[in-house]
Image (cartoon, rainbow, N blue to C red; front, side, top):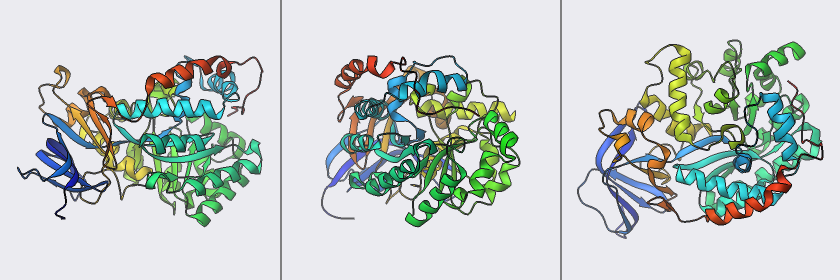
Amino acid sequence: MTDSPADLVITGCTVLVHDDQERVGFEENATIVVRDGVVESVTTSPESPPAAEHLDARGQVALPGLVNCHTHAPMVALRGVAEDLPTEEWFNDVVWPIESNLTAKDVELGARLACAEMIRAGVTCFADHYFSMDTVASVVEECGMRAHLGEAYFSSQGPQGREKSLEFALRHRGAAGGRITTALAPHAPYTVTDDDLAATADLAREHGLPVHLHASENRGQTETSLERHGVTPIEVLARTGILDADVLIAHGTGILERDLPVLAGATGHVAVATAPRGYLKFAWPTTTPVRALHDLGIPVGLATDGAASNNSLDVWESMALTALLQKSTTGDPRWLTSRQALHHATLQSARAVGLGDFLGTLAPGRRADIVLVDLTGPHTQPVHDLAATLVHSARSSDVRTTIVDGRILMRDRELLTLDVAEVVRELGERMPALLDRGHGKRIQDYDT
């Protein structure tokens, strides 16, 4: 403890805490002291230490900032463009033709709008997998969020795609004062060859980088892989060495029983990101096998995917849907309790993006990524079970204040680092050129 004033003191709140068994609990009438971007203390002392800034958070709950573990943030520009379509038509007829028009400016504007949406929804960190990622990195630096970024590539781009992904990851690792971490980002086993995946795995180990990719997104992909190659996409990751690196697998709704021992045998740190709203929208027959992965000790982080498929970057909704879908698919109302859902939203999501030692819990020494949630609204009263209220009654719009590294990015619902009106105006001007599909081109073919 030092005698100089703290940077920020938050008083009067109820704090979500984790015990030494990582169970979720709540500390009432607590004070959070932040210094140099880090949580210095969480106490129930009635004394408020001197600070440059005080926040009175009576009637509010302090949570670790939410993490969106897999998204394509700039795709908010395509929100609502490709509706009510099967996966193959969604990609081939609409999204991949439109994405062949993408400019760095489109990506920048989409990233700005996405960051504004996420900050307002209590998301402090996101794992992004897209194109023109230099622009996304600059938006992250400017708006104050935390991000785990990867430049996506297909094998159809030739070796340059993989090289560009590596170059981006090395150049931006640790940028924005440490708020940016990076990954190698091959798109998926159905768009990236085994040779490219193996080369990526080698690069990941050589440079100490994780890998972020889509795999076994749906059951159809797994069945096609078995028919064509005799192996599942997860088995492809194993034989190419990807599972010997640290890897974040997006979706995994096509993971089969036979994949579980393969995942259990991985020598790298494996995590899976689940984005349930999109699976429901595409009418996929299965969802991420959260319970089976949990039994293997594999963290499952919460995600939204891009807003072209999900229509939203609301991790709050992903948390509620994950809890509900798990009850439904396992036939067990006791599985995925509200406290378990909060654990997925906090510590497990932080671990999924490789930041489990820095984020995910409000404890001394952790980065001060904090959201304050107002539970005084009629839809969150009365509170009989605070965890259930947060998961099943509260909404992302109940987030009042969002803090990253001790810096307030939204105060009382007012964004402090982004101008939404200007972004929306500029994006509107870009739309005719972006949405034009008359050229007949697409960036890739979906054939699984």
